[in-house]
Image (cartoon, rainbow over the protein chains, first blue to last red):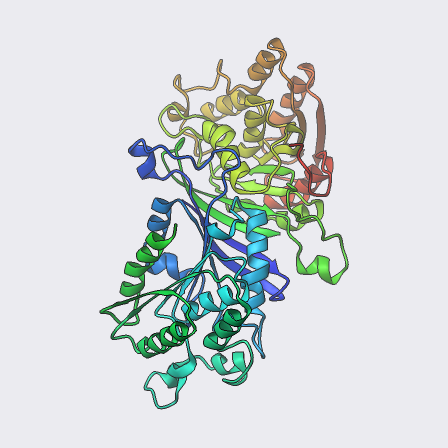
Length: 260
Length: 273
C-alpha cells in the first residue's frame, strides 16, 4: 500500500482539507513471497472505500487504531479517509458543508487525482459511530454513487442524544449546532429512507454491525426495525462488544469481506 | 496545490520510502483574486519536475526551506521530491539502488498514482549540490525520459569533487568505497562527461541543461570547469552565475529561474491516447 497524506484547498469547506489515502502497491510481503500483483497494469482502476471516522476523531483514526491497511491490501481496494470534525457528515446549519464535501467534492477530487474506479459497484462508503451515521447519510444523499454502504456501531438515530443517558452530556456540542433541531429536514435516516422507498430509488447494498453491550445498540435496533418495516433489506450483524476499536478493527474486516 | 506525503515500499531500495508531491489544484489565492483556476480537469495531466535534495538532506528539504509550492503553483507544475540519502544518486556498491529507484521505479509509481504526463517533453529534473549532480545523472542515464535538467550549486564534476575530497579540500558525508566498487567514480558512468560521450556515440538524445552557481560558493570553481566541459561536449547549456554562497537563499531565489527556463506550458496538458 502507498500511504498518502493529502492536504488541499476544499472549495466546499472554504478551508484546507486533510485526507489519508491508501492505494494498493507492492508490499514487502508481496515482494518476499513472489506474490503476483497487477497493481500497475495499464488502465487499472481500484475499487474504492470511503471510510469515515467517528466523533472526536479525524482522518488518521482508522490507520492508527486498526489494521485496515492490511485488510484493504488483501482485498486490493483503495481507501479514502477524510476528516469531518464533529459535523455528523451534514451540511451544518452553523458550520461547514461536510455532506457536500464528502459526497460531491471529495469523490470528484480523488477520482481525478488517483487511479480510482468510478463504477457504482466499485464505490463503497463505511464508517463507525458518527461515521456509521455518515456512511448511511452519504448513501442516501447519493445512492447512484455508492454500490455498498456499511455502518459499524452507527449513531443511526438521535435517541442516543436523549439527555437522561449518562453519555449524552459528553456528546460534542456541534451535534445540536450541526442539525439545528431534531426535526430539521435531511437529518433523520429513517425518514430519508422512507422517501427513497416511495420514489423507488435503487439503494446501495446496506450492512450494519453493532456490539450488544454498546450504548448505541438501541439506535441500531430501532433503525433496523424501521428499515424492515419499509421493506429495506439490511445485512445486520450483532456481536458481543462495546463502543471501541477492538470491535471496529474486528468488524471492518467483515465489512471488507462482505464487499464484492 | 494539493500536497501529498506518500510512504510506500520500494523494491529497488528494499525498504519503505517517503516522497513529497505537489499537484496543482485551485487554491484560495486563485479564487479570491480571479486567477486562472480551470486546469485541474478530467483526463488532463501535469508537467512534472523531479526535485532532488543535497547531501545531508531528504525529501522534506525543498518544501521546508524554500517556497517551491508557490512557484510551482504559478506555473501549474507538479513537483516530486524523493529521498536519496547520501548516495550521490548512484546504485550503491554497498547500499541501495537509488539510481534505479529514481529513474525506473519512482516514475512508474508517480505516473500510475498521480495525474502527471509521461511524455519526455513534460518531464524534468532539478536539484541542488549533490542533487544538482543528481539531476544530470538521472537525465543522462535515461535521456529518453527527461527533456531538461537543472543544477543549482551542483557537484556536476563528481571526479573533481572526489579528488578534492581525497585531498582534504572538501568535506562531505560520502562513503566513496560504499558508493563505488573501485572506491572512486573515475572511469564509470557516474562521470557525467563520460556518460555524455557515450550517449553521443550511441546517437541518443541529450537533455538540455541549466546550470547556476553562486560566485562565492566553495563549489564555484568546480562549476566553472564543469561548464567548459559541458560546452565542449556540445550540450545545450544555459549557464548563470550570481553573487551568492552554498545556501537556501540562493536555491530559493534561483529555483525560480529554473522554472522560468523550463519549457513550461503553465497549464495542464492533454496526452495523446
